[in-house]
Image (cartoon, rainbow over all chains, first blue to last red; front, side, top):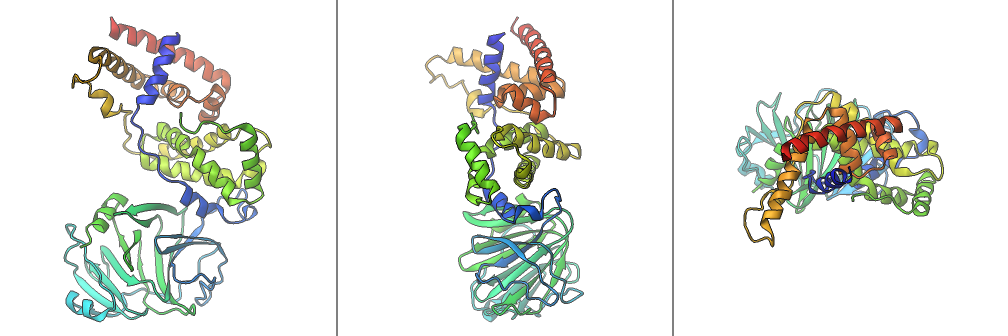
Length: 243
Length: 189
């Protein structure tokens, strides 16, 4: 019955499909490796995040790390790198680096202005640490007990360092997102760890481990990294509440 | 229509360039087909998040399988088959599923500013009734209707996307249309 088929086609045009996400960025990142390395394998890629400070491929000069960088792409000052193999964890047990302090003292101790979320549960961090792993300093806002925080917000300026994060285990989901108009990246999946590398590729200490999802974005000159037991929508709410 | 197939020559050339490692060629294919891939995945998963994951994974898997892709074959049905497989895998473990919805703008016809509001209301009611009738179909029938008419896929593409033989698509379409016809006619009566 042509009328019914015509109406069904018209109906298709009236359906409120969710907006199509931008798949190009993520697919580009995941397909830039030589194809034969992966043909038929389908094994999970390891993903390393690094600040977009250095174009030279000296990354992962971490002890025992000899991963080939298969591809890298930048999102708002963040460098997402796909590697064929994760570097070994250089330090063993994780800890939050630096010394506990106050928000006021932290503002005085670092070389950049950082913002604190206004979102419920994130406006008053339980502990504040300042690390000196990178030039200008790093601020860690810890929510919950320091040994087992429920969330961690890290802020630093990307100048002069590489900032790396790895994600191990099952296939990592990477999604480019907009954080208040700024580009960001959302990583979801297995537990992962991160560490700082300086310009020479030297590990600078300060490793922390949480088994949660991560949102990384840049606002002004400051890179923020939120790691918490949150969904993407919740993480975006926190990120957008910076003030 | 989203993701209308490229001119065959263009598409074959892009696929061949992608096979040779030209990243821009594959990006063009992703740009072109991401909407139809996402929507196909969404019809299967009824979850935007799962559909995005399935479409992303489908494009990546298709890229790494390009070596097995037959030169000159249409790319879109092959791609949609991979994406739909990913979508089905996610759906099986899935939780809450969205219902299909009409755009709000099309339901809001009561303002009277439209040139012929009465006609709009009738059309809108029929669309809503038709959508409700589709939602009442068995899922396998819903999917063939949705692929064939909502996404305007060809029978071959519908068969690829749903992992069915073309004859099965034909028979399911025929059965589903018959059910819809009877339900909508009852509603119209």
